[in-house]
Length: 86
Image 1 (cartoon, one colour):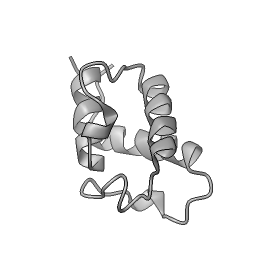
Image 2 (tube, rainbow, N blue to C red):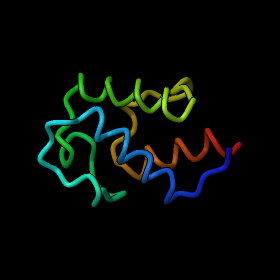
Image 3 (cartoon, helix red, strand yellow):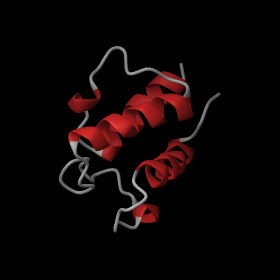
Image 4 (cartoon, helix red, strand yellow):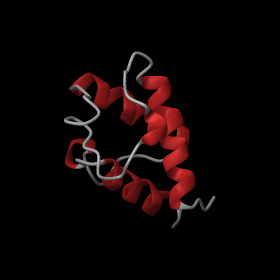
């Protein structure tokens, strides 16, 4: 199912809201230049939870890249976009 970049970001906001329920961040204002660790404050466990949720939500697998190789929200969106729009 093809999705626009904007739709992917909106779904990513939903995923992160589920995996980061205690965050003080306004996820509705998620920007592509935000870093996963620095700006979003994800720990290694938080990254793992997000990987699992993203894989399930978008029905993809991070099989040819490590999620730790992705540093920004934009890089995650690029990867998701590539995987679902093949």
